[in-house]
Length: 185
Picture (spheres, rainbow, N blue to C red):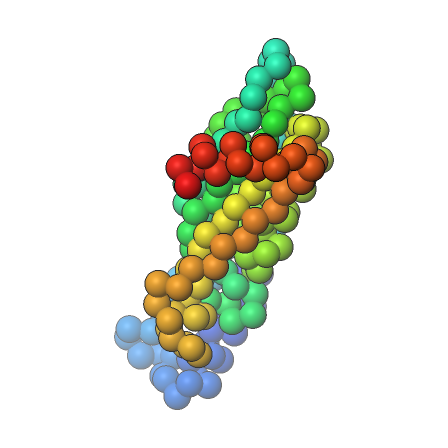
């Protein structure tokens, strides 16, 4: 749960720190807007993946399930700047499947926290393994980081790709190849 008053105070101090007048017309409501925004973009701090993955459905033997191109937005914990991209989440069910929207919700739970892309990728895969108990999971994220685009090295369009394999995906190159084929690569 965010503390809106602390956020408001911090934003007002930040505005003063950069030489702005926090009381001028265009900025006087900014601390409150930022506090409301932070409550939304960091909502994952109050959520768990279990909430999204707890309801499963029995299924006979089925192959790989891949939900691709799940758009996500997150905030880099190093600079508090956004990074955004697409998540591709696959798992091999072991008698149980989850509703497809729940895979996207799992991505959201972890993306809506101060984050590192590498950790985000692993957290999604580990949550699938823990709560779905599949034979394996594979997660690939591709994202653009504003900390590289608008500051520092200033390389717009550069994308970071992270990949995590668990269970059968880590052990079986054929499954990995099937993932890439399903991705169209």
